[in-house]
Amino acid sequence: MLTLIWLLGSGVLLYGVAAAIFWLRQPQLLYRPLQRAATAGHDHDLGYGASEDVWLRAGDGVRLHGLYFDHPDPAGTVLFCHGNTSDVSRCRGIAAMYLRLGYAVLLFDYRGYGRSEGTPTEAGTYLDVTAAWEYLLRERGLVPGDIVVAGRSLGSAIAVWLAAWSRPRALVLESAFTSLPDISARRYRWLPARLLTRFRYAVAEHVVRLRCPLLIVHSREDELVPFSHAQRLHALAPDPKELLAIAGPHRDEFRADCRQYEDGIAAFLDRHRQGLSAQRRRDTDP
Image (cartoon, rainbow, N blue to C red; front, side, top):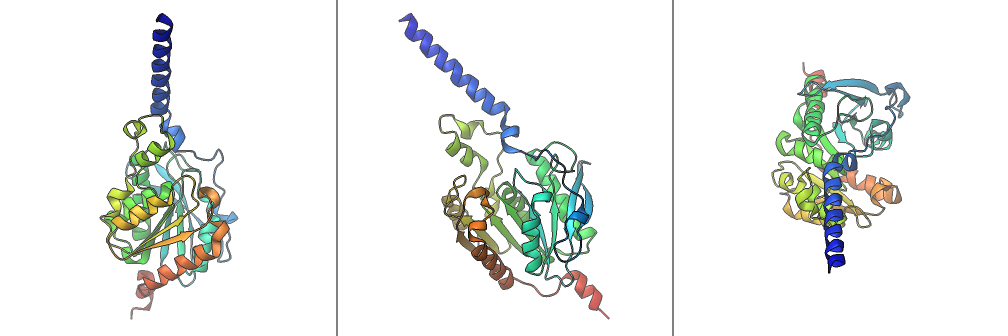
């Protein structure tokens, strides 16, 4: 009997320790910046001239680094939010694609990533994307209708938060999840992970408030975020909305199906293109 009680007590203790470790280590599990600084802008020539290093200041004073890729005749500007294991130095492929489609591109690193200062938090990432948005409005002279907001994985949660209140021209979400507690509950089924998750990133709560066209891009083979999350978000979002199903694992950046991926995004953007950018309108005013 004493042995049984000891075993039960040990099991409860170990379970409690595991739950405590999960609680304490969540920032390290979620935010995984690379252990190298992003390279300088002059290393990022994608055929339209070298990119420009930009420095942003978040609302709480944290200094952030970004790269701006100009286009000689832009149809608009894409503000891109990368995933939790990336930084701007690894986003040249996405920048090159949007440049091919005729868009200028702003990449930026969240606090604690690349050359940006600070330590990442959920509230901090929202301040960071707001700083990037305000840079495009104030420093580049754009209006919300000139800007396409896009995000991948964790970046999709940050992008939809911004789009829910800023009303950009359009929103593109790649590998989006309904909420971080939903992901935790699936990944750590042996823990009350939904209750223990300290970060929300509640995409489903924000997507219902969108007032811009939405494209959801998701792989049916995504092993980290099931395709059902994309279907749920598509069902919740107001019109106009589209769902593009592609192939490839979560971290493949869709190279397994890149033509369908790029063509689908291009067709969506063409359907929601709103004429000349604000800068071009000013340039042609008498």
